[in-house]
Amino acid sequence: MKKILFTGALLVITLFSVNAQGFYFDIGLGVGGGLTQLDGTDVTKTFAGVNFTEIGVELGLKAGYGPIANMPIYIAGVVGGIGHRLDDGSDYLQFNSYLLGLGVIFYPIPLIQIAGSIGFSGVGNQTSLPLNMYKSTSGIAGDISVAVDLGSGNHGCLIGLKYFSAVNTLEISGAEQNQSIFGIFFRYTFRHKLRM
Image 1 (cartoon, rainbow, N blue to C red):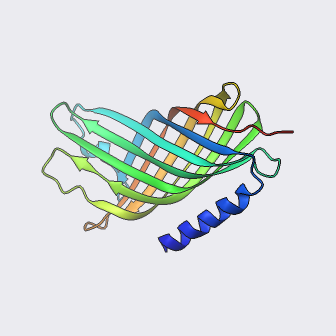
Image 2 (tube, helix red, strand yellow; image 1 turned 135 degrees about the vertical axis):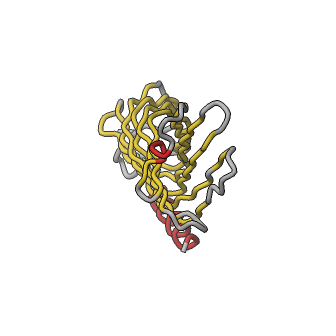
Image 3 (cartoon, rainbow, N blue to C red; image 1 turned 90 degrees about the horizontal axis):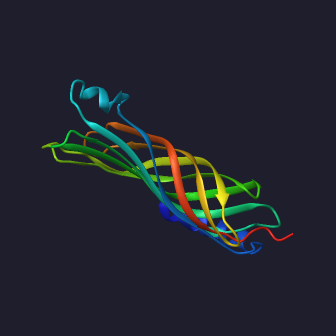
């Protein structure tokens, strides 16, 4: 199934790139409030009374083509992920979800970028505690963002807000892990602007 989806995605990108004006690329990271639930229970509530530091981090890159057919739209392959860490100074729990998929980027005006992605998700959790932090290779993830695109020529800097969410069924335990982050991000971008 993954091979069929990947082949289909590659075909779509190839077809759209025939009328595209150039290469698109962005890479960066973000921080914000993370939320991880296992079978509907917020993991932070499991540690009531424990004084821990909590942080959510988002990383990712996009590569694709655009603008397409004289419209301010870009199509891109997306690789990204989020991490939600709970740390009390001696022990930690790290919940990680990944995204491999396709994205669409739209510029309603040259200064504003709106983007969304969807694709396959996997989980790679870690801990310093003697727990079995189950993994998963079958899930779905997506994100949506809005950013200000600053820069001259083909080079720019994106500063914006992003919501990322992933749902995975963990191996062995069968628990459903729902993970999300809402935060601010910063990205370098290289894009060909629409030629009128």
